[in-house]
Image 1 (tube, rainbow, N blue to C red):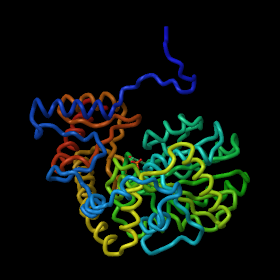
Image 2 (cartoon, rainbow, N blue to C red):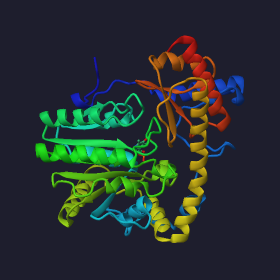
Image 3 (tube, helix red, strand yellow):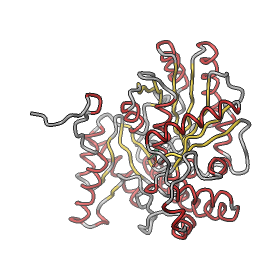
Image 4 (cartoon, protein in one colour):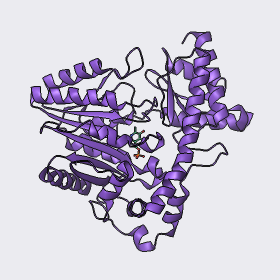
Length: 415
Ligand code: PLP
């Protein structure tokens, strides 16, 4: 007898959490063999080479100094005063997009993705992302009764696969009245790939052409969660500028995450931003998102919003936080590059890495490879098409060691 009254759609059997399980195994190994003998490249937590969590000192100081009223009070559903401008400053510095920009606060980038999936698609309509992608994209779609679909991200040469992308867009629009395209760049999770401005220009052209031809609704969402760790000048601006003069039946949106940019993953704040072509569309976006927020989580964590606005409105604080973050980003990118160099020197093919918290190694049997590596005290996350190695949490020397061990294991077992 099943004493449970869950609705049919809500029932989900317990699934093992691969990342958690791998991390647990790594911790047990470290207890047994000592921490130096274990490479734990499982989690997305940023840890520096001295073993300290990467937390921006400016954020930590401001957060701890907040008065009780800021710490504990409700925030307005559309954000504390200055929220939209603060998100714009965080993403673009002093540049502003030539449109009607709005940002609605959400619990992390995850909340922004939820709002995107629910509010820009009707039941059963598709969200298109890349085959290598952050797994929760799929879960969020499934949870909300939307179709999750993918295209092959890379060409043989490791560049953006525009023909696969165009074919997938066309195919989805043949069968549906609306489409959301979700692309994570730069510092793509899990590969570290960056879509170049040239590549994004061609993506925009494909969207434009399909929107005109089909007359159907297309929403593009750029997931900028890792953008501040790419150390690229005006990256968000370059990406957004690709989408100038788009047809009326398209909209550009973006995911912003304080978890990464402001090192506050536990304080849960991010935003869904929209680049509307008219003030009316911007208002409609804001009102709709506010209704959705009200109906799901109400308002969003106030102290995080306060910290964001205080930093972004004060050029001195903004510069200080940026400089602190640059040191973190340099460490993470250096690890990624050292991993890639070691892998290349040993003939191990990896997904193209440019920045970001993870590198990925494609392989035929990811679960078997992860298992083999575990036996050598190297802990990684098996994905569908390969393994993910977290360089944000792994000491630089261990990243190099990991590359050598992964290369040797792949060659030896032909995985
Ligand atoms: N998007 C991507 C690609 C991510 O990897 C993550 C988190 O790891 C998020 C969005 C959302 O993160 P959060 O909800 O913590 O802001």
